[in-house]
Length: 159
Image 1 (cartoon, rainbow, N blue to C red):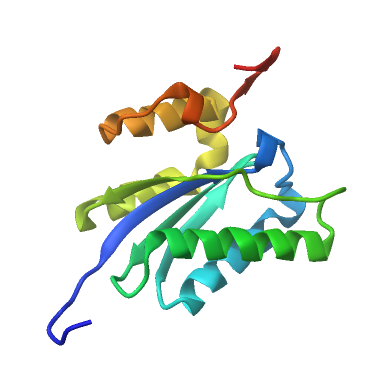
Image 2 (cartoon, rainbow, N blue to C red; image 1 turned 90 degrees about the horizontal axis):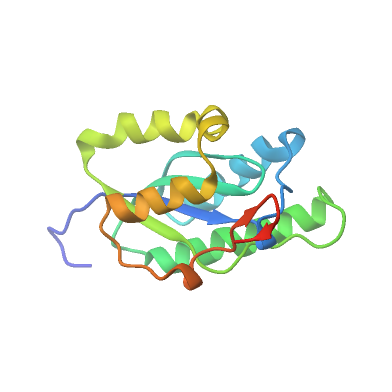
């Protein structure tokens, strides 16, 4: 990186448990989120807040140009998969679904995004993950095709 180059890019990253299974139980969820935060910090990035519910996670990070977002997300997902499996937090093998959503914010939006992520449990009492995710894609004017989104489930099976 050149001298005189300074940046701070604020990104919300969203990804889900493989099969959208409700595997991130409250009993160990905070430990997993702290572990994720440690990975982000160890990579020289800023962990603002990490939170989620049983089937998905929101990371809000300050990303420096020294690292590609795709590399950071890959490392967080790989390392937490190993961590969850080594700790035997779940029966069987845990893994994350492929892909993620990434949404950028300005400095003035940090407090609102922080509160939104902090209140994920309350938020999902009113809105499904699918509604939340599609709302984010549309709010950020991201073109998408339904068949390439995460696996979404309703009460009767796959949507």
